[in-house]
Image (cartoon, rainbow, N blue to C red; front, top):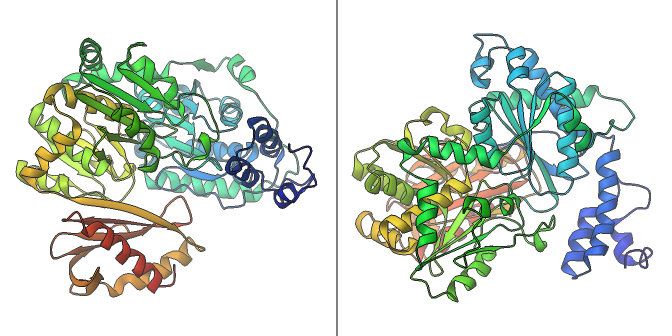
Length: 573
């Protein structure tokens, strides 16, 4: 098709022959998907994108920056062989200046460059186009700099973090943009604790990378390695990252009270439970069967478990729209207990349903805390980001336990790792005490399965039980693409300061008074009735995100409209 239509309006709209910089291959791929074209046609365009990824010797279009969860950018334009190699050299440079007893050493968890080289890096990638190729380049830079590399291949973020802990590695690198659409590539760096790096670390990587990019005027293509060459190096060792995850869960059993083996065995013995997991073509498709003992039981169904770098044309995130397939499947089943889960491409986000009630992490994180505290009899605090539902706040108050409520980003939970029973954020990420400090969809799945086995009720019923005792909360979140970002966007958002304590906001047909404002991450305006809305810039995309929570089922949509109204008022919509 593409060859026949090389002079067509469609092709000429996106592709400038012989000029990668002026071509938009991913735009063409998206258009081909919308038009329902054959996979062969799409693959032909991907071959052009691959050449761009390999041969691009320019600077990234967007300045390199690590946000709340790594560096993300458009494949071919921002993320390509040369830029990924430059960021890896930036990490090498950072370790070269580590001194024992320094603040940097404490943040990285290593005392010297030599220690970092010896302990090495756990390296993996998700199912994104070009992932293996880019991972080979990262490995090349590392081994040429004297680092040991533990190669995991395609894997999930939480699983790689478990491997860091089990191998006592210095850090991990995962080539993934998490839940972003097919246009994106990404680069996650986690330190020796297995968790997202502190801001001071990512700021250092960013500064080093920008300096390298500016100084690197070499008008030549980065020398290329493939995985075969990488694995042939004496400093490279393959590892079973999921095996590391299983070992870590078992070792932490006395701390968190969960048992993978016991739960899976009980599930497979019972006839009244059905579990469905939607992998949306991501890395989790390689792991779910193994987590369930490679069972062929008809009570376990895996959706979208084939490799597809286009994700079937959907944005590959845990969302209501993406859960329609799994809800439909559960509706056809007769089992009394049903568990449905959807996981993002790098396996660090998960959302649930029982076929009737959708349960995002706003509710599930609080349910997990209630489960560990009340059913597993584990005592301790709970930690959640400031943009997350206040249901967990009510539980902590009722249990007379502490609450930790930092800015958005899992790295901000570092002060309470090993103290909080559950750490979770509104964007479907969770972990627990005795596990990794990185969000992990698989530990969320195990939690959900144990909830069914222990309580003998569906997740929706469990949530109703909790809400009937501690109150109901109705959260939602959304985001809008904006034309500005960085300092310019922050300056525009300053205009929201007019909405301070005592100010009134029109919500629906009435005005609500702001009781107080929390400004540790964007602007969270809490109303007198306990409902709230929060507006903050995205750390990884040109977007403004807003989060709301009402105490009534009808009030959530009105708060969403009020948040959009504020953005329109200051000129962002």
